Image (cartoon, rainbow, N blue to C red; front, side, top):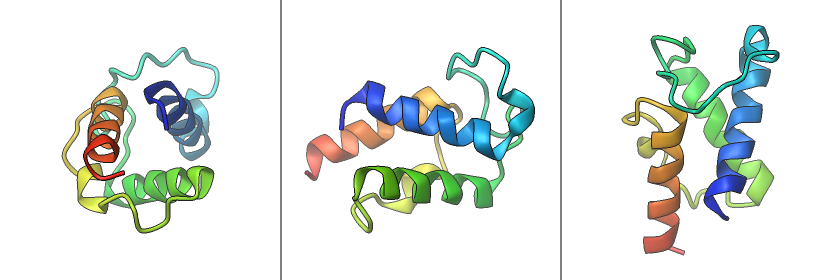
Length: 86
């Protein structure tokens, strides 16, 4: 999984979870809670989308979805985790 692939999947998932953002140009630097209004349940939904898209069920620790503040931060965390634990 490349950083750009993970980012594209997560950005698509955000747009599905929050249709009001579908037409906006998201940079990935928007705050997950404050600006995108994604709570912990929505973050788990992002994890499920990522797992299904890449066929990596149970390979990504769900705890990494709770700390990053932005999509770009989340992407960085996922990519680093995958590099360490392929």
